[in-house]
Length: 378
Image (cartoon, rainbow, N blue to C red; front, top):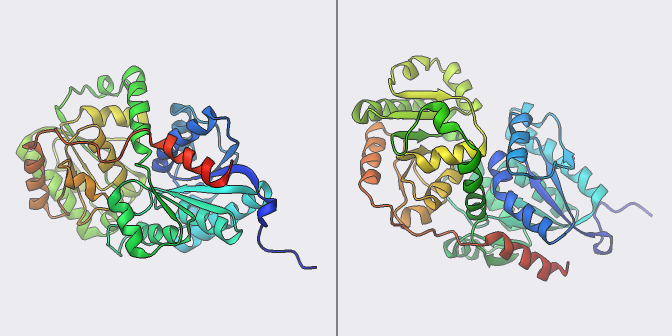
């Protein structure tokens, strides 16, 4: 009798596979992992190795007090193209899942990591749960948009952060069960800002005072891989520097640093007098920088959420956002990459009162684990 290429339901064990591979994913899963530990539920962490520095990821695990991944797929970050990277992770995820036979695989977000994990589980007939389901930017240039749409359509359980995300899923005609749970980033921020206030010395190290500086992050492919867009953003930052005269703290992502060198744009950086480049930092340091800055400029979806939760004004360096709730409540302005539009966005947000409500829920991790236990009879 030929060996089946799938796992039968009776073979699956009452354990949960947590897929991580990017630093935002580690952060968002940290409170869910802690909730599983609190309830003494069996699980394991599978790290796909997508991000550049595994040592940097290890710092995140230490800071967030998380158990080490049981599995790690080596060499993933060396793959240049999306297809090759996803294929490598898919093969590694499948191998681990065949060994462990988990009843449920949880993926969170829209990175290639999550697509690989969801596909591996789906093909083996393991249940798939998508945390942060239903986000849509409707910008088909973004690889993240491809991923989140595909993952939503192959998931059994869709944990939507907001009612708007649920509406997107219904409109798309997904097959799985939809639950509006909120976003676990709320729990991550609430839990870790207390630790950051106690442990981080980043403000002293950089000689920063509260609301006396801007913070900036920049890494999205559609921004830094396109020279014209990257040049426009740097011109916008130069305009901000000359207009406001405040320090602009910029923890530079490895991808961004590489593209600036490749495009010979180092001269643009030198022309920005108030720009302070620093190396990538841990989550606790970043949270404290974010909480105390006057305003954050970013192309990160996670930072849009975190700044909204911490009541920090945000200007998004993209044409669209898959977090429209942050715009709706008044926490975020989507400025695009035009220099004048970026400066205008700064002015708009600095004149807005920090009175918005958090649209992403509370005690989210408890709700998600409650649903998992109920739906899968764990």
